[in-house]
Amino acid sequence: MNNLQYPITFSFKITTLSNDFTAKNASGQTIAYVKQKMFKLKEAINVYSDESKTKILFTIAANKWLDFSAAYSMYDQNNTEIGKIARKGWRSMWKAEYDIVNQNDQPQYKVQEENAWVRIADSLLGGIPIIGAFTGYLFNPTYNITNKAGQIAVKLKKMPSFFGKEFELTKVADIDEDDKERVMLGLMMMILLERRRG
Image (cartoon, rainbow, N blue to C red; front, side):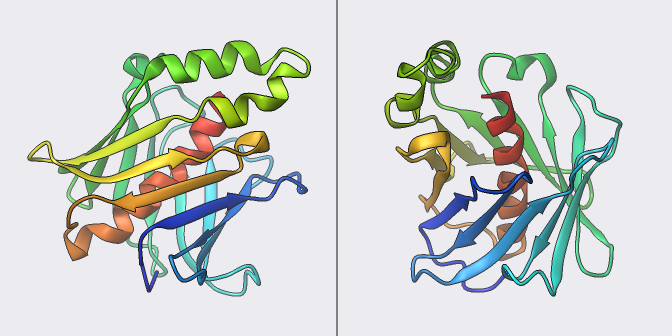
């Protein structure tokens, strides 16, 4: 992925059966199109260069069968693993928590939901007719991505919108060049998982 100018916006398509979204940089240029493979026993997504889907940049796939604490491996065009994102099992029940690790299985970044009560309120009220339609405007979780020093590197926030279809990624501190794509891919996978959870 080139031109990672922040903020980066993830916009979901709500008119398709598949779970897919477009990533655009601050200039409005498409940097990736993410499509989740339908009807797979294992989670799997393709990351394309754009919506034409002619060029696959990366793939992400669960390295276990559908499992609450599965890790998701990221592969480049040469099918070389470049890292993983792993959910923290039961610790993620109320407050999302993930680890992003490099190709050597060394933890690099931690993803943590800022406020668990936002998710709980969204889940409880989201099922109520009429009121549920407005939860996308009222309850918008923020995720902090911190480096090994505990410093926040980027923030991911769900933006006010119907159906929770917009997310924005902003940079807070510098990220190592080698980690930029790994962090981006990890967050792409996390968004799909968290949207499904509510």
